[in-house]
Image (cartoon, rainbow, N blue to C red; front, side, top):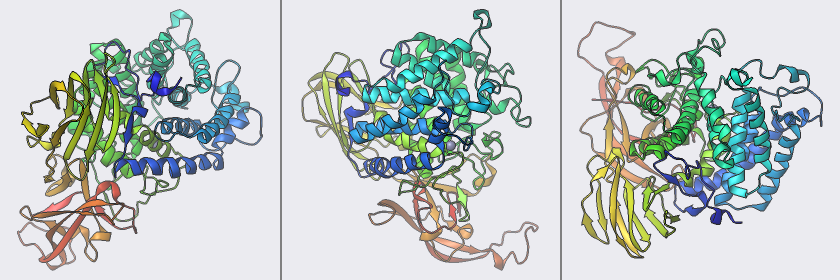
Length: 635
Ligand SMILES: [Zn+2]
């Protein structure tokens, strides 16, 4: 049976979820054919996936599985969670089949799956670290990521099942899930209390429940959330305390997002999955409080998350240092996953807005334009020392980027009854099935994110709804027309609704004006006082030394009245819109000779005119290393 006829190749399967507001659309029903995402997806398939597979072999990650299976001897290589990189690669490769069908890749995946299968123990347990000499140590230290590894296995298995129809990896996942389910649960069922120091398994279990119809996995996910907040995990590494792994308070009582950022957003994503299945209002209310706290007090203008190197964690409210921003690429990816689940649960455009912000400005900076080098941290200011690496000893980010980019088309559309919801914009085609079985073709024509004019040809017959996201960055400026006739645009929850009798060839025009926006931050973010960031459409901009030579970026001042020119440069950084303006360089040495501090007075240094050029932040650090700033002095 083909995937299309099963319509199962979806990123998160809420098609049967009792409390979901939106139903997913299969990835392979959507083709992106634009100048922005399509080339990145091709690089992801042709360069990222092969280079990562090579690294999985070269760094012993697959050999660890072979060692666990008794095929080779020698020590375990690398870190105790390295199995996850194999699983994330399998997940990325699975999603990629939607856009790039490839029997050879399926064959290669089958060979990797064989190594996974052979490493599984007879009782279903699977983790290559706890093998051989450490086989008796399993489930003794819950900060050693056994369930975290299992969660990535489950997600990979679900993706592989949905995209290939094969249950080979799914069967392995089911055996491991059954093992965990037989081991952990309520004590009155003769099971052990347990939960993982690093959340992730919750998402995997709910998706496994959706894929198999086995409700035990949903109940297990709920159990793993319910036991949190009672100190079971203890103080992480003694010094970080219980907040580090979100074990300081029961989930339903949380009102501040704290601790390790990736763990926090993965946990929230898993809880959002549970919420979509059960509709429990206490879980939904906690998710809303955490979302509000994160987006109004703890998130960078890029959408980056996690402001402390110490504990890879969220900081205090408004603690958002630029050069020392931790902003792990995985935290942004985890947030996209969380917000996708919130969007499916509640159909509120604020979640799609955040997905868009983070895709362009917090996920994408994590990978070089060539698709083979990565950032773990994504600072908003740098002196030219922070450069991308080909790989990391803890390599969570690279395959995480790969799986998100491979699955990206799945985030563009949803349905509800006879409504088609359009969340993201990019040139391309899709074939969408309404609940009553009608098929509607959608052809998007646009130069998004460089231009805000979007034309969507709607090829369907009869009455149905098309709902278009009107991004919050657009304010009241958006306009809408059908077949050239302007219609009023009244967006509810971030979406404009068009309900009419459609005929094949009807065209909707959505215009999202993209003036350059000068953005300032809340005054409590002390580092950004007297500074602005430039944004245009969904993109955040930065200034980099390569475009602003022979000046110290710290001395660059942009006047509030300076006109900012917008130009598309096809030769630069794969083709980008640059922003340029007359600015000045203030020479502090003329009034600050040999001083770090002084009594206040109004004199400032001599000003020299200059021309400033800004590039999209996602594209920084793709040329010779040099200083970079997101926040620019104003005045
Ligand atoms: Zn990471």
